[in-house]
Every structure is written in structure tokens, then in C-alpha cells.
Length: 382
Image 1 (cartoon, rainbow, N blue to C red):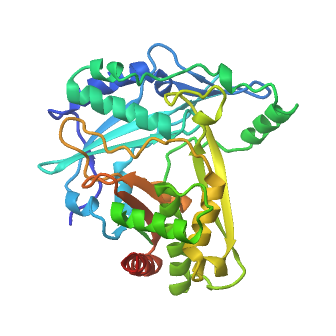
Image 2 (cartoon, rainbow, N blue to C red; image 1 turned 120 degrees about the vertical axis):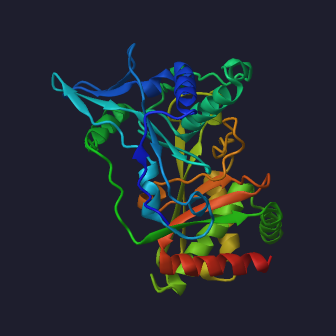
């Protein structure tokens, strides 16, 4: 297997096309080409776009094994880091810091495929917004113009007037800003830590998901929110807790609290609802907690599904994982690199079969091996 480090290139047949179409997509999602402006205290930060602002787009070439990288098997996490672009450095003008918000990288694997990598600041927007930008870029590249994108009614919605609540307690806004000021802005290159983690993908089939739903509803008919998302998260949560016990990473069966946290799109929670195309952050955090013994016990899955379902309740529709066609066929794989650091799991639609889900994890190898066994054994018993 060759070195994973891509080398920068200046031109390829696809390069001018991707560059031009990215620019056209950014005309509609223009704040992504802007900068985060951080003035001295007490002035507040702002996102500013000016004519001439742009997004860093790097083209590179790699001779690494494309099929290995796009497989589901356990792979070393650090082998993916060179496929993700570095954000341009923060500059300082008149004591005001200027931070770019998005960087893109296209890595070409000659005769095999192309990888699109991105890095962006969540201060700009949530995943829903970014995915909509990537989908618009894919549509424009595939069809040669933005006509189909515009006809689809997917233009970003920028009106924030409905987000301003007069019912917010006095002083909350000031308190939140003061908290935000304590968050350190990374002003140099982002270096992912070299961990011993491996990353792997596990597929939850549509039939298996329906059986999980049926099992939960049979045992807990009063549970109100038994969605694909709920049962997938519940099953993975239980498998993770069991695998950490099986691998010796932590003791199993005790009273130690296990937490599950996810964010939900709350665009539909407002009255009137905010359009799904709203540009920005519109999220709410959902928490579920249980004792370790509750999750590894016989009723572990049912308990997890009940707790997560209660935390989410009427969770609005979310944008699915990217997997968009740029004109060369549907992407083979989506990888969320940040799970190496965050410890989160990723959920994406499956390329090969509609309705199936791909669960991405990054764990120490011994824990990943244990998880693979627990995951497979559990599905066989459905």
C-alpha cells in the first residue's frame, strides 16, 4: 500500500469544472465564503461577507489504495487525515481577528476515483446547511448549471426574525456571549491527534431496522417515538457499552452512568416553523442517561430506545448524509473524520440499498473487535 499523503496538483480535466461549479454554488451560500470577524471586547463577533471573499479549494493527487479507504473494514484513522483540507490561518487586522469559515479539497485517485473533503466552522451553520451546500454543488456540477437546483426550491433562507425570542430571560444573551468568548479559536493548522483508533462502518439493513422497531413496540407499546434513528442509536449505544466491558476498557454491569447525547434539528419546532432551508445553526441537544447495568441487561435495548425516544420525541426531519451524485455516479462512501476526536458515531444513508444505514465508529482496535462481535451476534438474534 502506497503513502497516503496526496501531492498538490495544479490541473486535471475535472479541476476547472469543479472549481467553476463550486463558485456558482457559493453564490447562493455566500456566507460560507465570508469570514468570522472577532473584534476586541466588548464588540461582538459577526460573520461578514465582502465582494472578493473566496473559499480555499485545493486539488491533490494520491496513489493510496482507494478501495481500501472506501471499505467497511477497520482502517487506521490517521490514514484519512490527508484527505481533509487545512483551514487557512486566522489573520489579524487592526486588532481584529479574521477567520475563514470553509475549506475544500478534491483528491484524485488516478483511474479509481475522487475524494471530496471539507473543513468548516460550525459557528457558520449546522450540518443541515452544509449538506445543502454540498448537494447544490453536486447538482450544479452534474447538470452544468444551477437551473435544476433553483427549480427544486432549495435556495437558502436567511431571515432570522422568527428566531429572536422576546420571551428569553433577561441577561441570557449576554451570558451566552460571555461564555462564547472563553472558547479558544484555533489560529493555526488543525492537527488530528495520532491515536491508536481504527475506524469501521457497520450496516443496519432495512429488515433489521424494522425488526428492532417491532421488538421495541412489542415490549413497550407506550413508547411514542420509535423511529429508524431511535432504534439505530439505541442498538449502537447498547453494543458500545457491552463491547467496552468485553474488551476490558471498563467494568460492565455496575451503577456507573452511561450517557447518550445527540443534536436534533429544531427548524420545525418554531411557530410558525422555520423553513428547512434556513441557513445557520438551528439545533437542540437531546440527552439520555442510564446505569451501565440497565444497558447490558436483558432489557438493555428496550431501555435505551425508550430513553432516546423520550429525549428526542417529535424530532423534525433531518437532512440525510451527503452521498450526492456529481455526475460520475453516487459516491462510494462518506467518512466523518471528526469522530476520531469527538468519540461520536456517524450515521449516513447506504449507497447500495435504499433504506439501509451506515454507522461509522472510531475506537481502539480491541474495543472495535469486541463491538463487531457484539453487533453481529445481536442482529443474528433478531
